[in-house]
Amino acid sequence: MFSFFKKKPSPSPTPAPAPEADRPAEPARTGWLVKLKAGLRKTGSSIATVFTGTRIDDALYEDLEAALLMADTGVKATQYLLEDLKKRVKESKSTDPAAVKGLLAESITSLLQALEKPLVIGQYKPTVIMVTGVNGAGKTTSIGKLTRHLSDRGASVLLAAADTFRAAAREQLGVWAERSTVEIISQQGGDPAAVSFDAVSAGKARGKDVVLVDTAGRLPTQLHLMEELRKIKRVVQKADATAPHEILLVIDGNTGQNALSQVKAFDDALQLSGLIITKLDGTAKGGVLAAIARERPLPVYFIGVGEKLEDLETFNAREFAQALLS
Image (tube, rainbow, N blue to C red; front, side, top):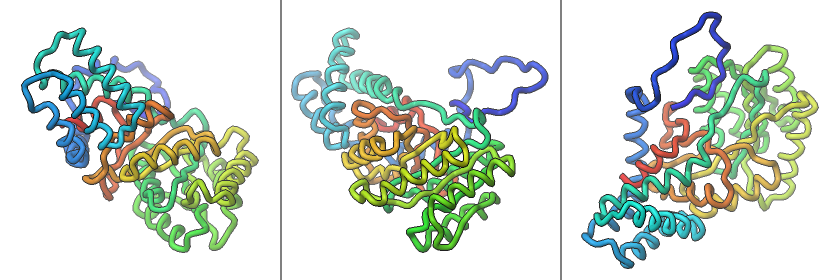
């Protein structure tokens, strides 16, 4: 478990922390893992069925290939995992299908580690984070959860209601701001870029640690709206030449391989710095993270498994792989 909020150094030396493996799991993290496993149960049960036999043969690998593809892992990631798994089985001389399942968990962990990276806050003040995504992906809700997450770790947050296309977006973000007792910059019917500029300027003037900019949900095929995103990015740079420091895309975990298409389109347009994967709460297949890791390995800073404020957590490759196969 890592901390992503860069705190000010202590004036006095402190004892070195215990190694990660020697530390007991945090109660909150343990509860989170239970939710994650429950959310990925549909995928996990489908893959686990492959390992209920007594033989490791071509039929097992064929069934596993089908299960991975059905889990939205994608062709490239599935081929990679099968080849890597066969190599691990050969090297370990495993003959038990249950042991092969453990080796698959290691293979998935290795693949997903390319996505595991902490979100660093504190290098810039304020750290300006643009958040985008398609309609219905859970973008504004994720911003609300992220606001609480950052606030709980000592960061002062300012929200920018730059989603001026959707009538209820400003009000929705205002509710999240009230829940986390943070300030918000908004304008009724205002220009999204102007709101973003005002928010970054206010964040600098008020000494905020983070400015979170909520942009309008849009499809990558809506070229005029994608251009609006580029405009917001350009205008933010006028308020702070180093910003935006992070550009995050919120992905609905239920969208399958379409999620990979969204990642590619938004990354090409904006040069994304990271992802938030939402709605991994029962119907999502989860394997799409493997597809992303293989074809467009952007950091996954957070994943969400529900609607509550605490249902957003930092991404850990090993935890996710174990939950995916539980």
